Amino acid sequence: MNTIIEEIRQELVRHSEEAHRLSARGFFREEVRLYGVKSAEVTGIAKRIFKNLTNKSKDNIFSHCEELWKSGMLEESFIACNWSYNVRTEFEPSDIEIFGYWVDRYISNWASCDTFCNHTVGALVEMFPQSIRILKKWTGSANRWMRRASAVSLIIPARKGLYLEEIFEIADILLLDKDDMVQKGYGWMLKSASHLHKMEVFDYVYRNKGIMPRTSLRYAIEKMPRELRIKAME
Image (cartoon, rainbow, N blue to C red; front, side, top):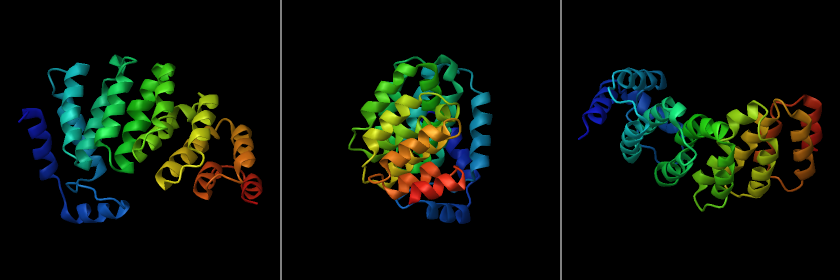
């Protein structure tokens, strides 16, 4: 076994707590495999071991991330998210294909999806806006997590006021999606965009409120002034 991966797993086992493992399961409807390590401790393990790596090249880090993703363990997925984000200065446009492969093959819950897409994929999209055309392809996937990823990868850029046109295009494609994880994902994307584009997002929601799932609508308007929320819910 890769000695770095073995060290990570030994540390996760050492810091695992059965009570936390059982309570954490309550946040998921799907079956989730986990050690039972608190998030702050997982982050600490990720940082300590990464700091001591002698080879921090992107290729080496991605190779370790692949092994972590393969395990199917929640905490290992979080470390993969952390490490892939750490090498963002080396990202290339083609990395979106690797990220899409990881989402499609390994992600099976909202926590891994959102942690990875908010930060790692979002950072790549900001560096290479042409990657959004790949996100649009993800909207057509049969995999619910790929479709959610197409939206939540734009959460951080949306908060910065970026890519509003593309955000609406992705929302259009996902508008009638029947999966609540996807509905929440694109609703969250719209809510993030509303921070700097409040009226544009309100107009979009109001225009589509007759067909937009209530789950998506509620997420999208959550941070809007009360009078706008009432109007959108009429």
